[in-house]
Length: 515
Image (cartoon, rainbow, N blue to C red; front, top):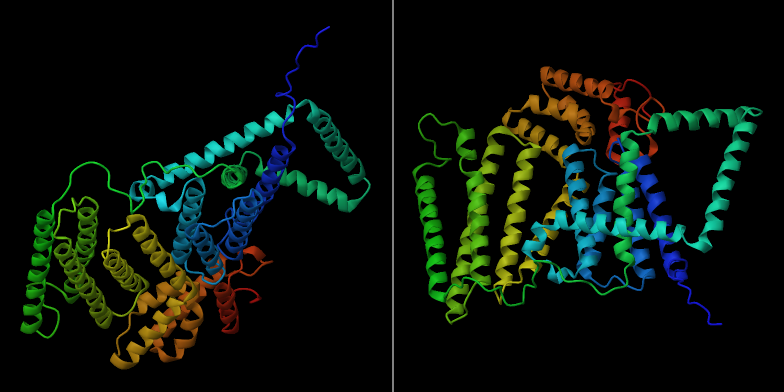
């Protein structure tokens, strides 16, 4: 009698595949639970650093155990910067800095995911533009595949006893817990807490947040666990690869375009110089205030510098390389030098404004943007030594931007602004007390400095700032210590704790000034 062949594909799966699924869920569910517990609806602090570090560690461990050692330097740098920035959330209490940290960490994670599914050298400008959609597509598709694999494993013949036994064990444990809770007050309290927790979280936003984190983590860890070779990035191209077919620009065309750009920039410099020679200060037109003059054209100047960079890159990528490259590069460097002067001029306009009206966070951010744009232009100048590697240039510019966010987050610039304004007041007798009030109400980072400079202010201004500090301590839950209906331990940050401490010492904190 001939034995009939038996299909085993539906019943058996490699043990390694099952172990991989178990490992993915073992990382995904606890980290999603940690994120929904400490981050949902919580003030940024230790929680962001804790979750980011844990999720990054899980990503690296899964990738390493899959035999894919993380050799991509840019992906590793992105993960390291994400961890560094997340730690800054436990230092600063500035809402703007927190927003920048969140966006930057999300972008760095997205780049790491994209570099896992492809090669970072293949992530060109088009791929970066599509990156949010591509990363979402990759994560959702991978998560769906891993969920399908999990259900397939659960339907396996060999897994049925395990699933059945687990269900029976859970039912038995729940029954015993309900029975014993009637005989023990501690268990009864746990039962009520568990019941209230289930009722309060069922179908609510926290559960949706937990599911979202689970999907994102499962997709990311699933991609890290893939043992296949990296796929090509759609639409991306290496910076050293030949440009796609299409319009080409000869050396003469590029010289004309770049020459026109530098001629216009030189004309602008000539007009600016004539204005400076005609008057020692910023040139004012009829009916124009000093503030309007210093703000005039700032945005346009930055856009002009960025546009020059885009033109240089486009011409280089679409060059026909028919000779005259040296002249084109020299003229390109000239345009970059002129663009740097444009950015420096914009920076000086903000400095003039600060000299007249004082220092604010917004004006400081403008100066940081000028520095970032300048460094990006210098990086472009270095790239012009050969064919421009656009993905590398973008990565370098992004690195500068991320480093700027990290610097602003770790450096207490709000306190520096307070001291700078008070120093200006001691020299000129002018101070924007309304802005100090705003800092007192909305910037915990500035509170210790504000309390320290109160004796240096005029009595009326000091009274206004003190009233704002009192208002902040009473009405802002971010300043309330744990145990008073305020923050949990995982929402701690260094400067928030410092603000509570100095407010308590000054008698301005409504409640105990602990931790």
